[in-house]
Amino acid sequence: MLNQKVTNFYRHLLHLYPSAYQRRFNTEMLTTFNDLYHDEVKLYGKIKPWFLLEMTTDTILNIINEHFFMIKKHGLLNYLHFNRYHLLGGILLSPFITLLSYDLIGRLVQGDLFHYNRAFYYFISHTFLYANYFGRPYLLWLIIVLAPIIAIIINLLPFIFLIVNIKQNNFSRILFSNFITFIIIFTGLLALLIVYGHDFFPCFIQAIYHRGLQNIFNIISICQKA
Amino acid sequence: MNVLPLTPAIFYILLSLSTKNRHGYDIMKTVALDSANKIKLGPGTLYGAIKRLLENKLIAEVKTSHRRRKYYRLTQKGRDIFTQELIRYKEAVELAKKKKLFIPLYA
Image (cartoon, rainbow over all chains, first blue to last red; front, side):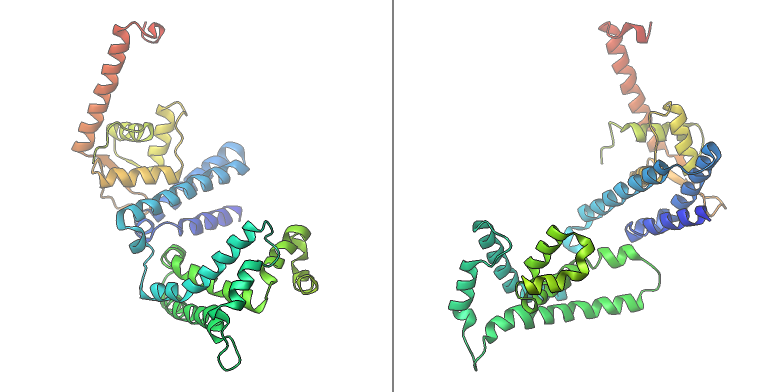
């Protein structure tokens, strides 16, 4: 039973290798791992904790090495399958990322990460960004709400299509060929979280830092009182 | 691509294949034995090295009916590279002897 669990764990770990490497070596590596497992049981009567740690560490280091090797061979953008959706998503998110960087630098300069940045607030509220069109600051809304939503949608749809159509469980392919997709979706969601939580985001971090992860379910009420 | 000087792991892998064709697990055990357990290869390191050796054509796969185990052999290029490395080691030892360094090692 333990052998099956350990073997399954190692089999899933091997899915992190690049696809070409998996096709070539996965079966052999799993067979060799099983041989080593049986040797360990024969020698000690059971599996020692360092056996799995040693095997996992060795494999993970080699996984990283193989991905770096592939990047060196194909180039980073080719390897990450940079496509027009990523480019468009990047363009749509770049104003938001610029504003976020301005805010973060301001907070670092003022020496307080957890309270709003006065300079940034002035910039937002007294420049063209806050210009009212039909009674609302639509330009700001466009940058921090609509553009991220569009960036998320145009990157999520191809990804969902890939997941639905993928014929075999290839976690490595899903993760590494869509790395930029994940970054764009994360950044878009971050924009929406900051907007709809107002100062929620820094409060969220502060609450976890001070109160620990066990209070994660109380975060919302803590931040609403802050 | 210049493969010399060989890393210790590659050296011992080629050493293990110089005597007979072997599969991965067998290579692992032979390397540990030959190096007196100074070099212990995990599956990740071993197959990473095998991949490089295959790409550089120092070793080749042997066709067998065995599905789960693949056997490897030393190619002529691998044999030549390994021989060059052994000659390099021999020259280094002879130089040390000549300079009377570490005499107890070869007394």
